[in-house]
Length: 292
Figure 1 (cartoon, one colour):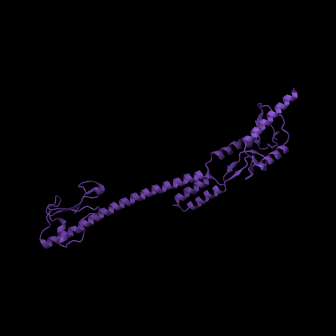
Figure 2 (cartoon, helix red, strand yellow):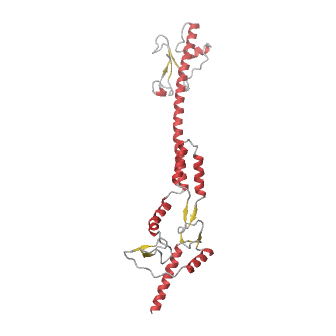
């Protein structure tokens, strides 16, 4: 009966061991660690962000260096063993080489001693996660030296957090590219606003110049005809008389308005443009422009 119980316990341990191995998908060729490989990216995200900021501040001069740094981090990203840190040594357990390595390391490993029950003076081995005495310097399960066990137990979670919590290079590159596009869009909006203001000022100055030219043309017309044109004759009379080569349309495509006698210049005439909207009154670009 005791033998049967021991056999059942051994079968149970064997089944649980196989289940644990099935949960992992790779084995390390160097140290025999069974688990999931981790991704290791060279360089640092801080350097990448710093290069991007310098690229913005220098108007793109350092952006080529930043792009090269991002591409280098992406190309040099590799998978490593989470136990020994060796690159490109993790082999799939389902492959023939993986099965061979698993059997090889299983046969080379010492027979596992009975587990130590948990008590106040115990700790977990950072390599195999088995419960061992707090004073132990050598793990009785995996045979690893624990001279730096305290450091490993504290540092391991920090490294894991860094691996899983840090943004991937591709994500950081996309975020930086989005920020770069946003900066260029904002700058383009400011440039477009400046161009629009310059165009408005240019049209305003052109309208004033046209009014001054038309004033001279009307004076020449008066010299020949001893009067200014009537409201019915308008500026077309000046054009027919050949006294003016200037057009009668303002920079916004509306006809200049001629009023005789004028409301502002009652002894002569008013000559004006109604601005961008072509309607009397208004502010800014829509304001009326009257001859002096």
